[in-house]
Image: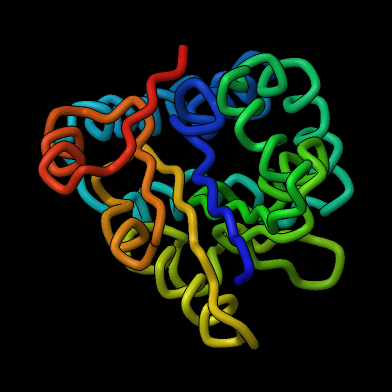
Length: 218
């Protein structure tokens, strides 16, 4: 039986929201305006309080600033952000678990709503070859400021794993899932081994009722 390990990123591997940290970085480096920052930050507050649903609309607004920006320019920004900010925010306990799976020759996959250019940098740092994130559109060597298709959120996470991993498998798969948010329930539903990370009340209640693993990282 093949062992496949799926990790969410924000709140699971990373302490907090990487996209919130990213907009903080963009403001600090004068890449976005303060007015634009406030508009985005307000949504993060609502999301943290559980008062908003799918983040697609705010993501479309957020990444509109990339319109007509060269891929290489954005890549350099992402690299600097990762090295100077995000790299310090990983949960050590989560990395220990992830690395143990890698050592034991299990296939590890990242599935996150994070834009693909940032998720690619995270995957590179963690030595993970396969990842599924939200795809930002490019034309030639520039970004358009638009998102291609659906964001990697809710049902779309389970869909991409079923389509690209489970349906293509040539042998039975033991699927492990580590995630932190109530929107990840569809992903948990297709998993064999389920671990909720630092869960809020509703997800914690479901995990206890269904006897899922509960992990607390700090």
